[in-house]
Image 1 (tube, rainbow, N blue to C red):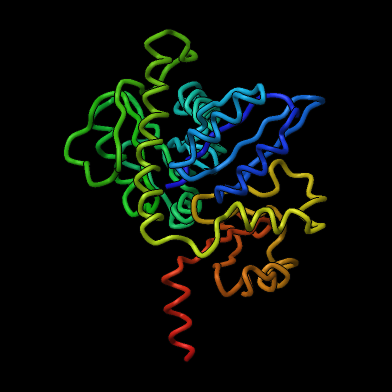
Image 2 (tube, rainbow, N blue to C red):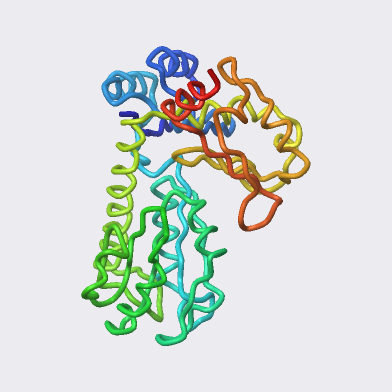
Length: 309
């Protein structure tokens, strides 16, 4: 299984690091250089982690764990209003960012009220574009149990964060963290910081299970390889939106308009095949100014090849 780690150090002998990453079959997920300092987030085979870590220390850098790198996670609240939104959701999103994830905060259009809360098919479709989602609910047990129905039929891993522990709704989420709920201030105390770490660890475990399932039926091409191929495409290179390409476990979010660019993307060649033949390329459910690219597994590609014969 591939593991993600970060090198933080100088550029001295960094070419040796890039050579080793290539030699072991790893991929550079992100590279940032500032003057003489370099930060590299890489995905490498687990069995080669010790050797790569040893080289990082030899060339004067530090090795840091970023278990959620290469993922995009939605942190969802019932609404974006002050009644539901303020501090825990932002603190949770921040702790996930520190673990390497790209996070998006989302409020439901009609999530207010125990008996009136709703989630639309469009909102579920948007949540399904992410690698996982964290639903943050409140302090009242009956309200949490009722609103747990909002998470039903969401097809990505769901972590429920709430105050009390709800009963009878275990089939609506993949993992549960209690003891948070709504708060009127930032989560700064030692116990609260420990709770944030628990949430990050829980998300990591949930995503690790998904990574293992992907390992059992590998993708035709690693998303980071697709990112490297596409990063020279001028509309992406010139895109002024933050993070024009966001890595997912099974693909990419590309922040350029679908109608204008999907034909080019479909015809990009990867390992002798058109990208459109080995990946699903669709407009984002948020709006058509972004593209969701989901890479097919090797077994899917082989099956489709067999149908053509």
